Image 1 (cartoon, rainbow, N blue to C red):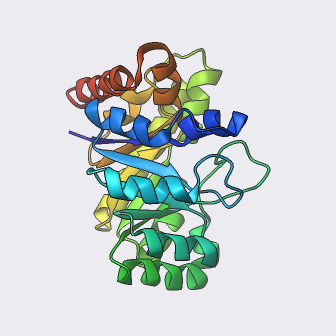
Image 2 (image 1 turned 90 degrees about the vertical axis):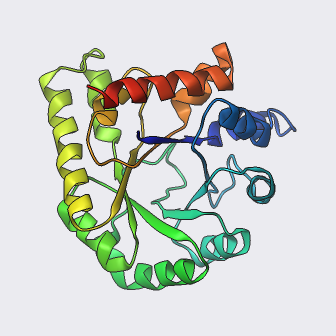
Length: 249
């Protein structure tokens, strides 16, 4: 079955809104693991708007499941990854004015610089991934950069689902799903592990989880949002059940 990696960034978003000590994202990560999370994901942004460096190092000591660090391709962030040694480092685009990640990394346009960063992370003992749009030229660049993992951006699928009244069988929604499906099969055909994520919710995850050859789904905001009402363990279990049910379709 597809593995579920829970992104805990937005637990820290609530904490940082008050600049206080709670809710603790490390406790949230532990609860997510008790709910069945197969991995924990976090994004240390350059402006430190939610997760802090201390959170990363605490997670590295406490969490027993694989830890995935999302980071911008900058010397500062590469150095942080090398010091904290997560199980996987995922290169993502980052804009100071964006609310959340708005698209995939244009790895094809910056391949020479990124290749050196990927090499440094790989030599540091990490698997390296890149978060890219569902385009063959970007997936080709992921392979050329030295990454062994590719994560397909599912944001357009998620937006289409919202814009079409949450109808998963809508023609436009299915068109965006087909783009993800094609990208996943292309990446796997190149020998890359293929993950997917962004904007996935308890309501729309079935459309992506039913795609063959996806190894992991990285989901955060929906799980954290649902956890406010039912608790983190229950929210994760519900998402895991949705993924399992979808994989049997």
